[in-house]
Amino acid sequence: QVQLQESGPGLVKPSETLSLTCTVSGDSLSSYYWSWIRQPPGKGLEWIGYIYYNGDSDYDPSVKSRVTLSVDTSKNQFSLMLSSVTAADTAVYFCARLTTEADDYNNYHYVMDVWGQGTTVTVSS
Amino acid sequence: ETVMTQSPATLSVSPGERATLSCRASQSVSSNLAWYQQKPGQAPRVLIYGASTRATGVPARFSGSGSGTEFTLTISSLQSEDFAVYYCQHYNNWPLRITFGQGTRLEIK
Image 1 (cartoon, chains in turn blue, yellow):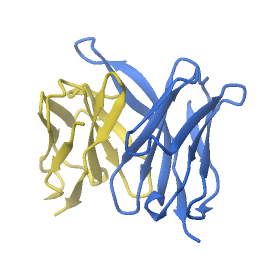
Image 2 (spheres, rainbow over the protein chains, first blue to last red):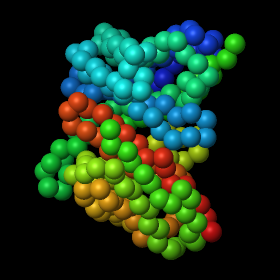
Image 3 (tube, one colour):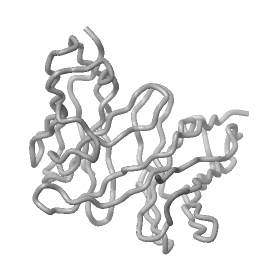
């Protein structure tokens, strides 16, 4: 059974860099995409970006200038770095596996099928 | 950028009744649409992908329909465990981009 676990500091000061790691157990990083998603308090879900096991990545335009995703296959982990944080970056951060699934017509679709439990990050001095 | 708009923001339904949730895309997204359920304090869980295909383990009372710009999630007979927030989610194939709707809160009437 695949499990994902986020880890990292729960408190980050404004203007500093937020760093989180997602550890994958029960499966290999290979052959999947891996995503980060966040949820500000009382609000909806925001997709941050994805990384492939080979290091290919892309990000949502709203955070692209501040985000870096990386992967460490030897540790079966992938990581998020978000620079120059402000209070608006306060959120629960989730990592998720992004896979492809065939529908009833044999068309393939991206699906976030396994999620971590989420970790709360507060930006405050 | 495709904007996903869900309605209503809150839906009050009695257990055993049918719930119908809507999601509209600002431009055609074909069938690249998924639905997720999120309960308080939990991570989201995928229910439907490809607009109408149930994910593994999802009860048959959940069904999805639509294509293009109009989509619907129907829960045929609400159980107590179904009261949660539901998000629709679109993905763009290339470049890969994922966009969520703002969510519909399904509450007990």
